[in-house]
Length: 245
Image (cartoon, rainbow, N blue to C red; front, side, top):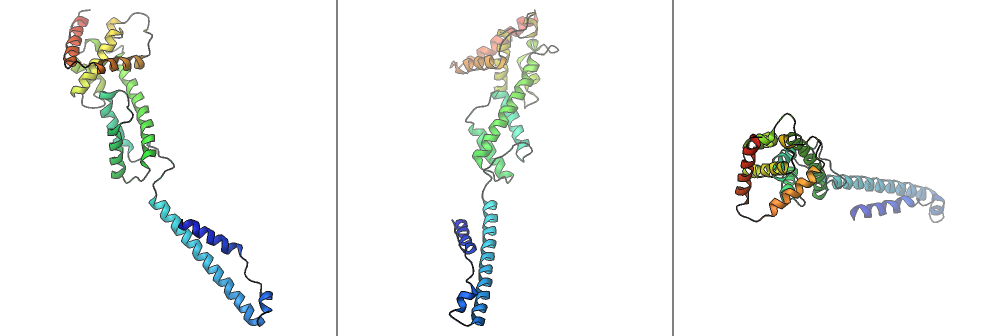
């Protein structure tokens, strides 16, 4: 409102012409009217200059105090490195980003405050979600590459070893939640005959991550309190049989 008032005042003054000395001279002496005209012109110039300076000062303060609402890029920002570390820790127990992600929002809020970033939070979160989605795509590609490796026979690995093989690059693979995700991945590869000794000559035609996500959702929806113990025991028996192939 202050800035609008200044602009209106400036327009009013700038559109007004100083009174003509000839018109003034009809009512008073020439020397006095000419002198008054000069003084009025000086006063108008001074007022306009002060208004201009005040407008510039208000503009500076507004830009300084208002957060950046035009956009935010995670790449090369102060929050990128710690954000990547957070995503690496979450990936082995998620595989797929979730929305809304309250934990991610809390993490980003802390990172913005810690690094003195004044960007608008909703703008930052949109950028972060896109960035996280791209990172998870890359992480999944790395994971799939190890599961389907021709050099490694992950089917013969015990669950703890398999967890280290595919997830140690991201975080501590000894976490119980990571073992659960390893069970999900191995059981999927076993059932789809993707393990090295189970593969046929022809490549298996499937949308790996779409079908894996459906497989994971079926397991997650199982409310049996002993499901993880049962699933682990089943995979351990499968590993024993696999080693004998």
